[in-house]
Length: 361
Ligand SMILES: NC(=O)c1ccc[n+]([C@@H]2O[C@H](COP(=O)([O-])OP(=O)(O)OC[C@H]3O[C@@H](n4cnc5c(N)ncnc54)[C@H](O)[C@@H]3O)[C@@H](O)[C@H]2O)c1
Image (cartoon, rainbow, N blue to C red; front, top):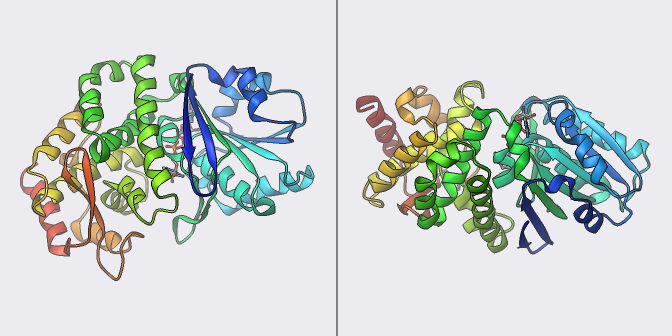
């Protein structure tokens, strides 16, 4: 079992990673000290893993809340269901939520934990690749609002993260590949050696071999932990994690979140951002070439699949939360492995990049 100690201004906490650790009784006994526990999961994950978790928990009071599946459940009504359950059970400030599931479960339960009595403990048990390498680590919690995704939320660090890579065995292949896009991202923005490693292990990752997957998860969490430790509240270097995301959010919104999974949109967004980097006089073009190759090897598609109308995408990018003073703030690559924040991109630059994919798919 690997342990990464994440240090943030508000809280330090352990991230445990390993195959089969969900059933590690000694680990759970260490994490929970006689606290009342509310397990939050969903109707897909609970039948697969709830029993294993329950058998591993130390004695003591525990309750469960199993919600419906899907992004649309990350809403105020389900936040209310969780807090109503906490209220009915008379759970106080010593209570602990265990969120077991993908990023939707983690974000929703995390936001309930952030609000209940101004903040109670939460242990994140992510079961999708995306949640293991991204959503469960770093303390961002949120639910969606009718005006947009993740608009109601807060920073609330978990007290521990338990990453059992064996849970990925039941993950649908499309979800697995979407998670790989975020893994690629860490190599692209912070670590050329990791990117090269992913390239060399693409066949093994496609075959879903446990060892390289676990290594990829560990390296990804290390990369995220370093950025979160340096900048818990995303006022500086943590923003680099948004590489590819300005395009991705626009792609998702323009297609009403129906055409692409988030990671699939990020894979396309990273290639677009790499081409934009070259246009802005940064990377030579090598980053785009290698990102395209690696995405393809890992079963992800690029912008050649055809994009929504330029103007619609640009209208969404204008609303991006990262923009300041009416200026776009893109994360670009100086070169593969080194990302920078750039505030010089114009609407014309974005048009040119999007058009170039129309002309030369
Ligand atoms: N907080 C953050 O920092 C952060 C970062 C990235 C994404 N997010 C959020 O995460 C969400 C996306 O997360 P996601 O991609 O995990 O989606 P998800 O939670 O919807 O999970 C994807 C699907 O996989 C199922 N599933 C989960 N684990 C499984 C398993 N082991 N076996 C079989 N099926 C399984 C889920 O029930 C769901 O149907 C979005 O809401 C996004 O906003 C948050």
